[in-house]
Image 1: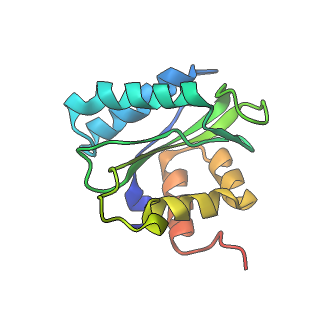
Image 2: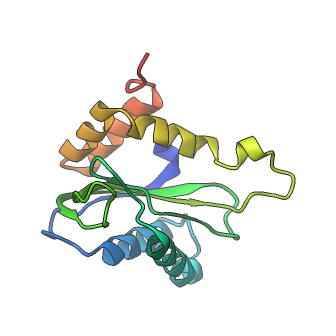
Length: 164
């Protein structure tokens, strides 16, 4: 699965100066439901799980990035939503900086037969590999339209941001 396929919903929060963290999470999950990537009746459960996860410790990993995540039983494959927040959002990040790139990740629970080394779906490993690349993150932060986001994800799918 490519990053373009994984991110079933993409948005820019260009009309909101400084949205609240929980509202960003809510809008991303609702966007996934609207795109048919999660069941509409699962939305409250998923939102609750993501907000509970934030209460355990921030998913703001620093460098302007947050990766809110949870596992959700009805899913059969990983799915994500991507938001660019030009005005920034407070995720209580490790570096105390605002977040401008939010990569929401949902995955099915591992099967009892899943090898320990495969607990993280490969597409999420690929996402993290790209998030370590400053050019990838800077490109996302500079995106001004959904078309820009699509172009950046397609470049990532080709491996354009991999360091050698």
